[in-house]
Amino acid sequence: MSELVAISGGTLIDVRSGTPHPNTTVLVDRDRIAAVGPMPQLPETARVIDATGTWLLPGLMDMHAHTTGERHKDKIHHLYLAYGVTTVRDTGGNLTLLRLLRERIARGSHAAPSIFFAGPLLDGATPVWPPMSIMVDTPERARGAVEFLAGQGVDFIKIYNWVPEGSLQVILDTAHRHGLRVTGHVPRTITMTRAIQLGIDCLEHIRITGRELLPSDEADRLDGLPVARRETLLWERFELESESMQRLVRLVADSRVFFDPTLLVDSALSMDGYAIDADNPANADVPDDVRRAFVHEERPEIFDLSSEYVRTARDGFSKRQRLVGMLHEAGARLLAGTDCFGLGKQLPGLGLQNELTLLVESGLSPLAALQAATVTAAEALGQSETLGTLEAGKRADLVVLEADPLADIRNARVVRTVVKGGRVYDAAALREQGRSNRLAEAAVAT
Image (cartoon, rainbow, N blue to C red; front, side, top):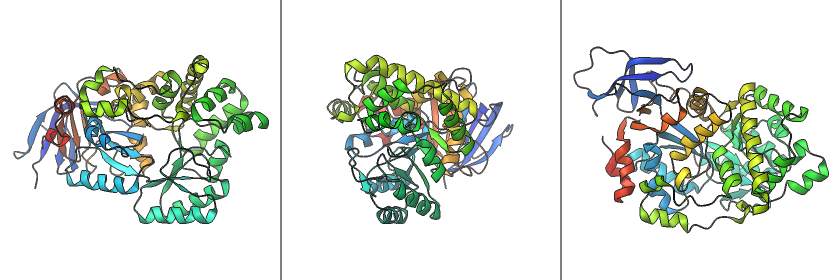
């Protein structure tokens, strides 16, 4: 039996209300929170971590990640923890690799966040990207694919760009019968409105099809273009003040669908064409061989953005940020996800911190941004009983910060200590791993 751990004296932030609770102790027993509150007398057997002058948050969650695929990714999973991310939702990858990774994490042999995963994506008859997908071009194949994935123990289902409407309805019905939620892109053949009407649970990215807001001939011309050019040209034409856009915002909010805007990846596509962030000082935390692997990694052509579209793309990204602010004002359930795994601003964990900053720049308060990565994220995972807040009985996932994140969301990245499932990690030691090229497991403090 492991020892009790008392994180004592910090200011706990209630992420539901934003209320700070000074001089609070979180008592951890194995992988659960045993008690929360003022504790003048700590258990004699507890290992005490003095958190005086710090702020305590629930562990953060990256709700759109891709954690497997290239071997070098394994070597920097620990950076999620270094930046306070204790849970990720993997929205598409190799099913076997994901199952094996989750087993390694559960055994404690790999320092990484907890993973909820979908496995392979479900797509239509003409998938171009990504390669890891199951073709569901008929309702029968759609049903069979969901039954297979449910039997393999996935946590949710992810759809992609070319799922036919008939297959989508079967996917939703079959997944819901198994108690699985469905998330994904709005298929290019339908509208966001239609996807919500059919019963999709969560929307990934700000993917409004042309047929939602534009004349049919224009939509037919633009909706099938590669992603970077498509989004640039669509958002050049979309008007936030139009009645059709206002109606869509109200629908998203009123339907209570979860909405994961992944502004970080949109920023990468719109601002620099997904260029490698090779010179970022944060890369000092990455082993040399991993840095080289990322620099030489081939980027899909669908992400390319020619120079003639740069200004238009940046204007479109600004519009999308304003839309996120409109959705927040309307009461939509927003999530914080990155869809990034790379160098610099896309580093595991740091990417989520940058997403929080982008959400605040879009009009959310620091508290609302934190909610998108904690309590609302737990709701989207169906894990509100175990994750998302610091309460007795919940999983012992928490972050100790050096400064108040409600005063400035950038303070959420100034992490001193992370507790994930009762294991205590020193954030500085985790970051040092890459500098010394040691394995991440050596950073485990207990």
